[in-house]
Length: 164
Image (cartoon, rainbow, N blue to C red; front, side):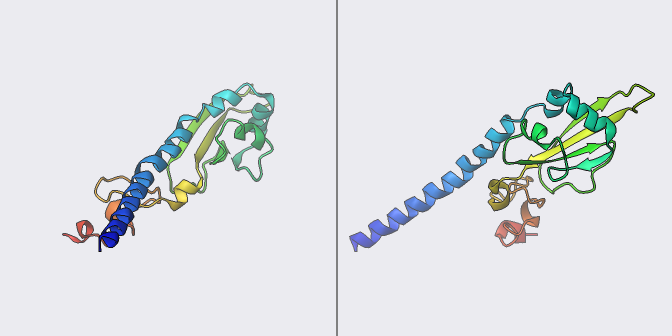
């Protein structure tokens, strides 16, 4: 009988430690990545290849169709995805936390026009896709799926969301 109680206590301890790990350590890994972000466009501003690409092209480009992909990626952490828009508005941005940088190139009036460059980038790692809503009454989208608290399926069946 004592062994059964000990097994139960061991299992509860495992559940508590696992929950603490998921709630406190995992989000910090993403925060570390955010702290690693640099001013990408400022870093590329004086790069001739980047400048020429921006002055010669108009539209939105991602890693699949951008000849300057390696230059942009050298300033982003590995788990981030991006969309570069030159003189255009993006047609689709993921429903997650998105960072935006803006740069304005002044053309010389005869050979090129002024261009506004927007760089949208976001975390695309496994954390963003496997996280669950952790606190259901804080008005924050804890799992970055675009749904806040009781609107999120992770919370909707809880009693706090059924009141009302």
